[in-house]
Image (cartoon, rainbow, N blue to C red; front, top):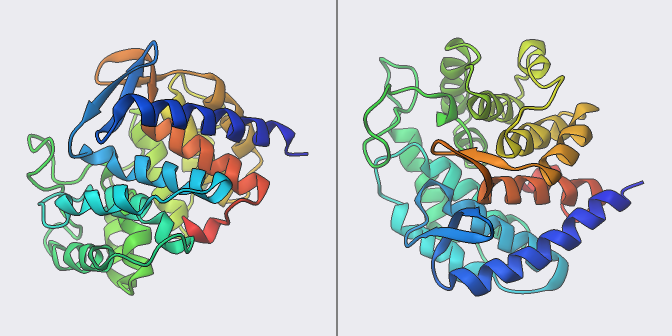
Length: 266
């Protein structure tokens, strides 16, 4: 009974085509009344656009490789967000849509080498939002599966454990990122999952948490995914937005339910 998930995908592919036409060679970030705010380099969200194009290519054809290659500008930057950028941005490689880009493995190796023994984690870095603590709730997302996929299991485990010891943040998107990281590292706890017994008011957080719960085979995953598909998101102090990570994770969850992709791909 996945008709509703198939409908989500149909709507998403239509929106993606409209977004492509609107943003050209830039990366979409967030939209208010269908007017997309964009970035030239993709920022921390560039991988979600590349991943969304890979999902659409699986369903309808297309080549996500050019957008994936444009992410390489981030390969040597000092930010743990390279995990988000390169894990989700490289989905087309794992789906067999195009050959692996050498920077995917290189970024995994670079992140592993950046482990700070004193912190027990890879620090946040200086390239994006440098004013803040070196360990943040969203600092493990994407990093854990990218490290594990390239053989850095011990470092992935240490990085995750350090983030889990910080506790569950009150910031809902942060709690969603931490849950997804825990699921990707095989460490989902009852306390983390219990945060999502009811949806948040942020479709972006709901979409991330829905994907985590679907991967964990938890029944609340489908409920959250439906909420994400119909809600709006919060970002940078604004509400009522569409955001590219909500578009991506909602599509990814629906693609998982319909069998378009498997959890192993992401």
